[in-house]
Image (cartoon, rainbow, N blue to C red):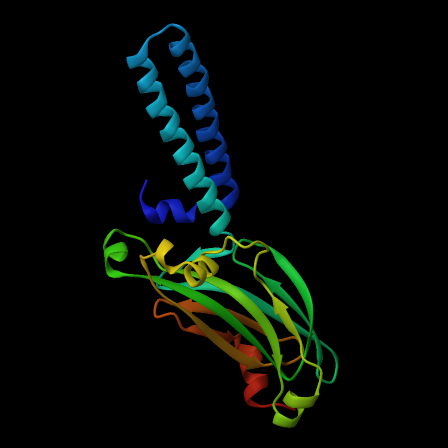
Length: 227
């Protein structure tokens, strides 16, 4: 299994594989006790090696499943999220977010525009040559005001998309850079568009790491020619 295939597996599947690896290790532990009881040192040594391999694989898969939560592979252009806007009152909106896997979420937002930000993780050349693809993680959604005075004084809205937990790749890369020497850089990318009632938008991430926001044709016309 190459890196690209491994990273495309959902976290739940990685945890299932980790459980199977742990089960394999437990079987080897039972076999090891039997070999020791039978006074067969060479066979016991072999079972010890199998036990260590099973434990190591279980830890690797469990750690990958935990740290890759919320991350997606970055291809030539990866769809990040789709947004549908509905106005409640001036500068007050409800946004429906739809992710590529079909998950949906409804959030309240204040402002004249929405802004999406993501974190992009790129690897050093040896890891890239080994086939390890760049990763991205949707970080936050926030409201943006056209008037700088409103930006300073009006209510602000920020929706955090980070997964709970401390074992995140970005956190590890920042706190313990020696643990992940293959990480080249972690940087943020953001994009925004004006809000219109009934507007539909899509956000994609380019291979270069730039977020791109696009309204559909009708929404684009309404942005270009507001009432």
